[in-house]
Image 1 (cartoon, protein in one colour):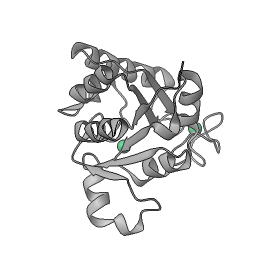
Image 2 (tube, helix red, strand yellow):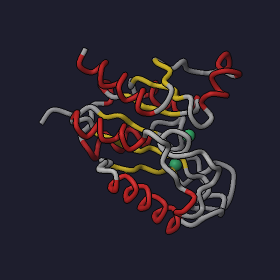
Image 3 (tube, protein in one colour):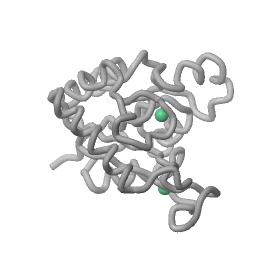
Length: 193
Ligand SMILES: [Mg+2]
Ligand SMILES: [Zn+2]
């Protein structure tokens, strides 16, 4: 089977509300058009894969068990709306905060592209034909490192980053979108173009 295209999706601020560290499942809320965006990917046969930095684990703010429960809530909230994720890939590390084993210089904390590479290998994804959507410059850099396209959304930190800090971006986005649904429409259009 030919490798499949994916849209990689940052979690906090892109798929869900940016509320700081999500240390309880009830703090996790989908953004308004997120379920619609995932349904659109499901219908188009494009893999929908979450890639998220969760250094709250390394920092000791919440356990991996809580993180698992939070992500289970994400899956359940999407399922209630008829939407399905193909994978959730998490970096729980931080290079300098907390204690080992989570305090480490890893290859998966964005802007490093380790989560994208792991997902591509496990799910059979075509990175060069894929797009990453996120609300921070570190997301854009991770996409660039594997030859994927990048979209900055203006939800979460995106608006402030784009309005006030774009001159300092180490990597320009290929596209700027209002939200995840707009980003997904752009990615799907690019694919069939
Ligand atoms: Mg984010
Ligand atoms: Zn990591």
